[in-house]
Image (cartoon, rainbow, N blue to C red; front, top):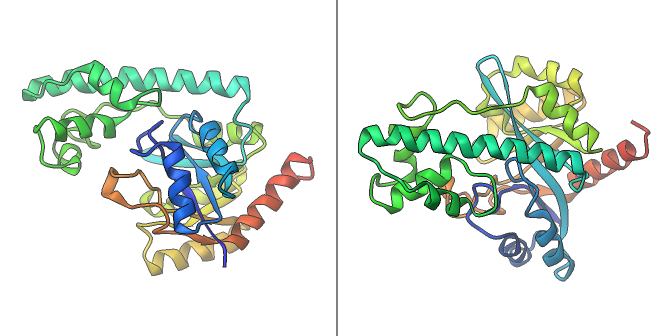
Length: 278
């Protein structure tokens, strides 16, 4: 039976593995298909595709966009996107510039707690990708300011902590519309972490096409619940590990995977969208 992992991050956002390493590992694990879904960047897709060609791994181009409605942070995954679109690249660069300025503001706040970080080191940690709090947390751990990445978030830079800086986010409508313009499928990521299922019908009206049912933080009950919601609202089912390599709880690729028939359903929907039948 063929399996897929449709939620993977690389070093181009807040993962620790290169795109090439991700593809090679997927091959070793026997996965037939993976999706690269970095935060606010598509820089990993081209090198991942080159690597996948020689290993008979199907690679779905994707992205993960952060949105906000009221007090709720929403993550929208885009699959089968036209990732080369010029307007999209310019928009992502604007978002990444905001990310850089946010990182500098967090670094400045940390100084009040005698935590002095080199901003250049933080930017190098992010390489050419989109910088985020996880990059800052890794350096805090490496430099001995905290014992773990989780401690960095719990004490200093997590939501509501003293060095937290609010992040610019799109509205759900903006995120879903961007993915639609890219002829991609908009999927609600890890709905359990949102904590308000009443938002889902509104997202469906905006053009949401799928929901991430299989996810590390979804236990059996939650998985069944979101499978039922997918059926109720006519949404496609996806899932994945949300692998960040050796960061973010160290959930690794393939620890959550989905049967390939769910990928086939996604592909059918994407093809219909691109041909104008949807």
